[in-house]
Image (cartoon, rainbow, N blue to C red; front, side, top):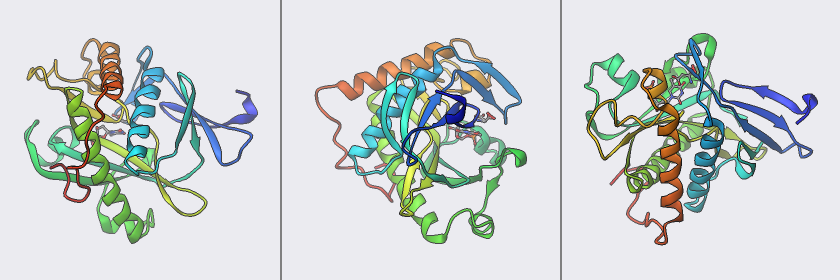
Length: 259
Ligand code: TMP
Ligand code: ASP
């Protein structure tokens, strides 16, 4: 790609323009950051792994009728995506207490939540991506009330599908982050990525609190074998996707969360 095509560089991806103004190329980097980029490093092979996992998951969601920005994956590290106006909101879905939920509420790590919890953060590095109330989100006009309702409905539906899918991979989807954007017709589409950078995934084959971590918490907490964990998630996602009997999502309902 040329300098003139370079549009934006984030912490984990670079966006490039293509000949079609409605299509961008997202290049996934091996760079890793945590704690609002106070910790920086490299996870070797991460770009290719996260691009591969995200492509599979976006395709899985598209097959269930969830519209996403994903088009295809021309190289192992890059995906072609629809150009969207990204809403500056990080949507966090939680099934099990971990991370900032434990830190901010005192809930014990690993406590199963009765129903999935939907949270919103202001996507603003200068402010440290603070947690938002619904009223603050509307006050800042980060989304309209209708868009917020649709984001909540879609996020719960996505959580249902992904929780079931990862369970088939022998992984528990503890929590994850989503981003949404609007296309020219003001339609809301799922954007960004879904990968071990943006999800907490615990290996169901162990209860050891360090062993079970299969996501960026290994990097955040300086645990060993970060690359191997990411690679293992990719292998399981591919194996489950290729498995002869497709997953049956008919008992998976959106607004009621995980059945
Ligand atoms: P948290 O517990 O730190 O709030 O994180 C919740 C989920 O969101 C977790 O799966 C990691 C993901 N996440 C991101 O994808 N980007 C971020 O900047 C942060 C803070 C969390
Ligand atoms: N993605 C965020 C950062 O790099 C935080 C995190 O994932 O922990 O700063």
